[in-house]
Amino acid sequence: MDDERNSAAARDSRTEGDERGGALVWLWCSLVVVIVDQTTKIVAVALLDPTSSVKLFPTLDLVLAYNTGAAFSILSTAGGWQRWLFIGLALAICLFILHWLRDLPRGARWFPLALSLILGGAVGNVIDRVRIGAVVDFIDFHVGDWHWPAFNVADSAICVGAALLVIAMFRQEAG
Picture 1 (cartoon, rainbow, N blue to C red):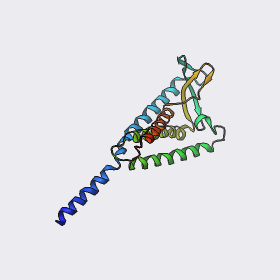
Picture 2: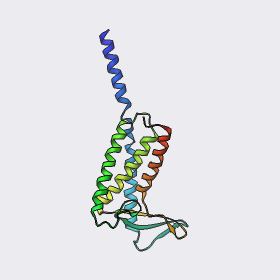
Picture 3: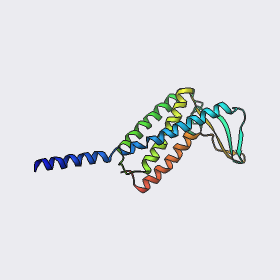
């Protein structure tokens, strides 16, 4: 009888442990974001002239810009120290996201997708900051003379991930 109870307890603890950490399989999504982001940035640097733009659609151009600041070029003229601040902040956020992914239940979908997109975008931009000291931006969305700040695939992944995170919270999928 004790053997049956011990066996059942071991099975329950194994099942309970197996239910957590399943969201780490979503890291493939982060890897895809990093690969697409870095590939598009390499192509942009190789093909675009920093002094001109390439019109793709009436409201979408390709431009080459280097952002030493954060979103919307915040702190871009701070003198260089912000590079290390943003690298450190992004790495801390990446560690937090990895921890959060590890603790999500196996069946979660929205949260791990959202976190993986944010993680991939953060890593993509950190690679730029470490490698060249600035983030490469090349997408220019505009309406008439109004231009949204230039951005990249990593920025897009972070924004989509943040939106999905809000949706996941409303769906109460945090587990």
